[in-house]
Length: 380
Image (cartoon, rainbow, N blue to C red; front, side, top):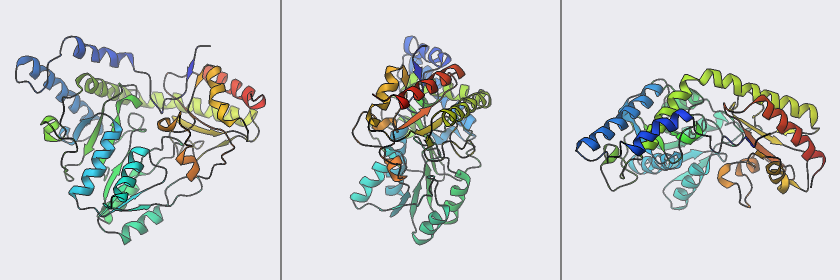
């Protein structure tokens, strides 16, 4: 068995067609898109075609799509600039957000820029919508930042309901959609949302490139200064081959979304069933085992208590299995998962996030479960 990759929520392998689309921008069309000569204009046209492709897939205007270095920059831009430009005095988020959101909010609160509130959660980690409405009702000039799909436990948020609540109370709504972009369809003509983000490497595109959707009604000033790129919204020479790869990857994701979802859901269901049948005391964190309320690409598994929990991922790696102990952004550190901590998951239970892609197979799932059974029964 070759090495098995089940950490697709951290990053995905690039699609060969994406690489092929990017190569000409490295080898032939190398001009600076800000140059007015032919070399520059050719590349500028390529960027704008990519922008239009993304806008068409999301059912919005190309003028509302701005390219960034990835999801973290997009989140920071939306949060920092909206608070400054719209006179926001209060922000609402949850303790389960990605650190690109949480750390930004905490920093701004510490600096006295905002009052920060955390919306309550139920036992599975879902947002308490009643508490969210209460916070909105009691706090004018609010920014709400809640992710669509949690990167660790896979819980999904109903963007339509939250968007309507924000509109009802005059709040600004930003959602980190990094984990769901390319896996779910986002119709921006229907969603009541001000800011939404994507990162190419989460749907088989290149690393180091993403985008921020800015609703035309919610114009903000630049976060990065130094040039007139991105219609004066982001200084710096564009990552041209990354942008081309991003557009191609999203195009491929939308074209095969239904087929790939069916395949991946089958893998996830198979793993859940086999784990329940073969490992006594196995549990699933958050709502990740519920296919209707969670990302079909993510399964967060809590194994029986063990003194060797810190060796669990190491044992998987020895057995040629790549997975994560939680959010990839904190892996390799001594800090536990803030998401699992907020959900009161017992610290003596080893937890592993398995995340799937269209390239995984039934044979791989069966092999992984076989090795998990062995690891649980014979710890180091």
